[in-house]
Image (cartoon, rainbow, N blue to C red; front, side):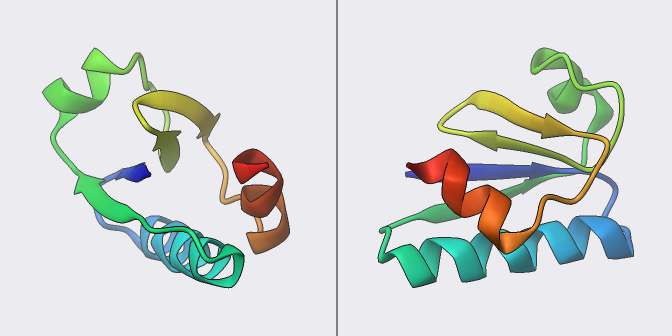
Length: 76
């Protein structure tokens, strides 16, 4: 499973990356985490606000930091 965390590297982006890592680890998911900070790359996903989270290329969350539990629900 591939997670893409999109944003400029701000504290909220880092919090999102940490939450993704914790949720995937707790669920026993084999994953890859990619951080995307380039505006052009984010635009390819249609992301206009950060932070944003995509799972396997599908945008799941934009403009907020989902909790570990919310990310776990996205994985189900």
